[in-house]
Amino acid sequence: MLLAGLFCLQLTMHAAPLTSPVKEMAPVRANDRAIAHFSANYQGAQNVSWYTLSNENIYCISHKGDTINRVFYDKHGFWKYTLLSYPGNDLPRSVKEMVTDYFKCYRVTSVTEVRAHNIEPVYVVNIENDDNIKVIRVIGDDIDVQQDMEKM
Image (cartoon, rainbow, N blue to C red; front, side):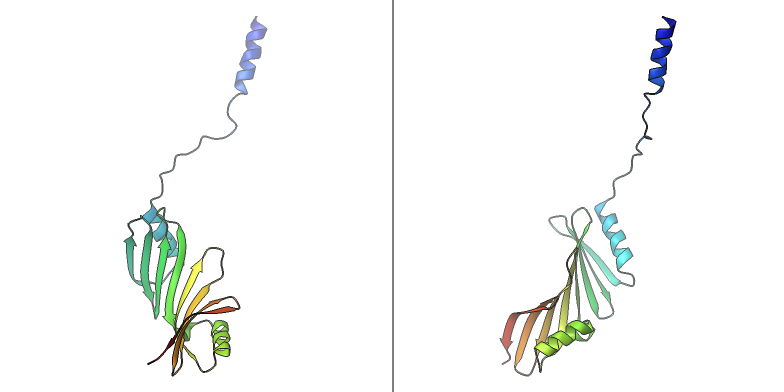
């Protein structure tokens, strides 16, 4: 009987869990997560304003030089996309050359750049000449005319 007891004792000594207990972590608030992302990715931003929409999504507007950043987060504070608006002179050179080669005699006046997860940037570019204003979309090597207006 003594041997049976020792045998059972030996089995229970090896039944202890092999992993350490899980530490409880305080949940991260959505605003804190969004602010941390913004601070890490938009250094030098000025005039920063935060807003919460009726659907609890969060967005931030800021300025850096001539660029206006609008950064959008979901209701959990995870980044969704960014809209950057800036003058035509700040359009990346390769995109600007492609646009001006395609639309001769037009000048780039303003740009809205869309950045999101796992897609290349999308550029919504306003161009004009003496007679027309066009809004075009540039994605990679593709150019699409979104609007074409005649000046009066």
